[in-house]
Length: 289
Image (cartoon, rainbow, N blue to C red; front, side, top):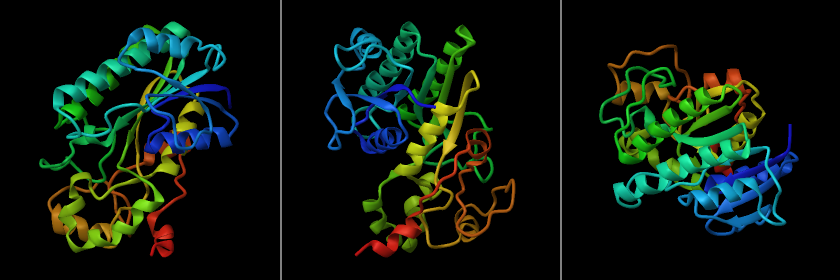
């Protein structure tokens, strides 16, 4: 499956990997962002997504850039809590997502993928998750304004799909996005397991995050679905069982956890999307200085 797709935030860390992957797989990509990408693999349109009029026009037609789209991938956002004030994070992220969802509906686009977040699971886990591995089955537990916005976006998607039974919307609860250059720091995490306890020692290689986006665009079941997207291993050299025994000895396990297996379950994404992560920091570490 290919076509014309807009990627909001296509100049960002995950966005660049998504644009690259989609172009390599035959998609025509329009990057909607406030700044051009350092990797100009696609047409670029500067747009303020908090402005509904600009968003509608960006998804409908923009001169020689495009005359209509088949899909939209919405990644643009203040990407984490604490980068600006709480109100500023909310004021940017939630209205921008509403504008993208509503503009896509007005443009007749029924294939929407957007970035939700691992934070809806309860990060930074000052209150532990109810069980391990954590998954999509327990209710959202936002602990920050950023995460609250992501929960509201998931609810918005559910209502948009209720309004239009032919609409397909996929929310991807991405873990902490990493590029190869980030992996040099990973061996230092082993000295103190508390350093990365905040997200259960999880991460997602940007290239595998991009694969999840592409697989979500190809997914053909109408309605809303959310998926936890993480790498299949942790950031740690210690075994996952040792981490559990040290930090969360009293948490119930839903299944046996072996080796360096991630404590975020990606079973649903594997089963429904065909998500098959292919990159691990353990393979790249040998190339680090």
